[in-house]
Length: 359
Image (cartoon, rainbow, N blue to C red; front, side):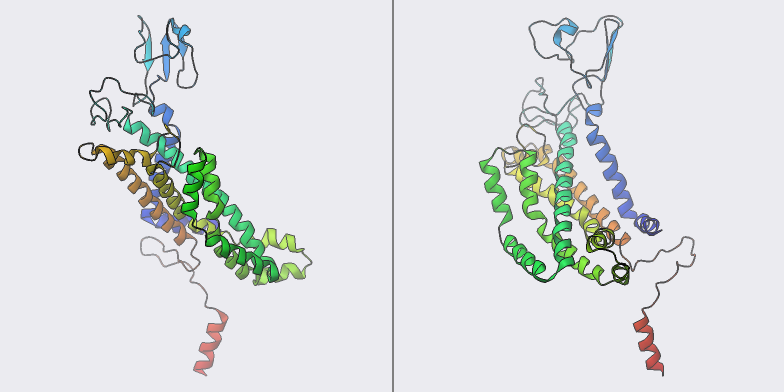
């Protein structure tokens, strides 16, 4: 019943619902990008047999090619009766358009959003790059949420000297300049997705642990927790079944905004050349190229920046809907002028004060 109420509240937030549809659609196309943007055909009929180059690797000898180690399906000669089913965009994020007169080349019929400074298709790199940005952002959010839930939950539940020492340790870690440390570590080691996620998670959980600790302290004073203790439940049982499940609200409400911050962080690292290793498709790397070609290659700045702006704006609207859905004081308003749902009951303390005032 509670989740149904939250779903109705979220759906009543029109901007959040539209943003959720946009994000879900874009995520689907990005994680299935091989089907929509690739330099290999989806299905190839050659010499009476069917091949699936997107899903399986074939040696050049399969198509009677000699003197090469990679099959270029765009120049593959098809005989009578042979055919190929191509993706919508016939470029992958690493293929170079050698037929272009100069790099970067402006948008045209072959490259819809133009090419970058190495002749690679901008549309393909944007489509594939969103996948890496989202994977990084979600991985950092999941790990940081788990660490914050465990650390803040233990400090808030057990209290006393555990809470005292735990909060002093958090205060010490919070004084470390995280961005400078991240740049220092990434500049020493070869950057990769694992290293970026690990370093980002090393300090990203600190801010969330404050909210989790406060929520655990509030939940520990509820009547159902006292009732569970009175019935003989162990501390671990109370902590696992009553405290933690009711303390994840801050993690859920902050999730979209943390994903926004992580996407911006990865784009900033890629812009400085400290992010994902080349030639991994990245939005920040495309924007970084505009420093050299900003006088005429406008597409390198406009399309990545506009897509980044649209994604971050949608995530913020989605976060507003999630926050309003988890707001306990929100009311569900029926359509067609119907009366609102049952109003929230006034606390007993407020009623008693009003009764004394009237008496």
